[in-house]
Image (cartoon, rainbow, N blue to C red):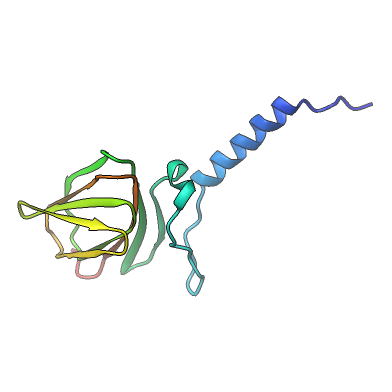
Length: 133
């Protein structure tokens, strides 16, 4: 005779599985379609993660809540920051560039920059790894 499964226990297991699934996002394979549409209602539960990384290129979905920021930093390769939803500001060379959904900015390799969300946002960050030494 098996014991009945309690609903609360099932809900805990289900929640744990969802958390693990978010943490273990696999990188895309060559030729695979990757969904980069705005997250909409799921933005609140989303996290930043790398979509793929190859020898020459890395693409990351950056997720920031309003008021969150990435501190000043630099990468050797050129980058683009494409705001998919919400609003972000990119600081570079003493000025700030405001990006809304659908807008993109380019930064040269080695440029010290920061990113701050002025509203809950997700962005597609592309980093060229070629030419980086």
